[in-house]
Length: 68
Image 1: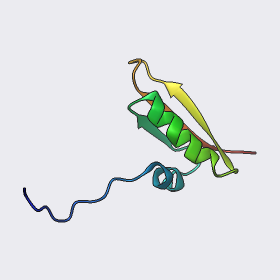
Image 2 (image 1 turned 45 degrees about the vertical axis):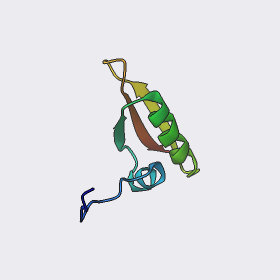
Image 3 (image 1 turned 90 degrees about the vertical axis):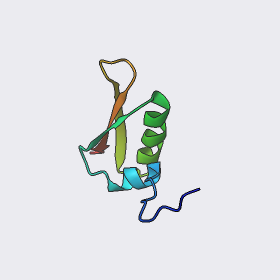
């Protein structure tokens, strides 16, 4: 076993959704990841997610859009 120092904790979906600004997008590795992040974006009633499957058929891109 090896002790490692200064390793950052991975961000969770809530943190990512909070850091995203209007119009920002994130490339997700699976539909499940995109749906989970989309739910975190929906938790803020001022925004909604837009999710699109990428041409590779595996990844999904999700945008955070401000409601009008």
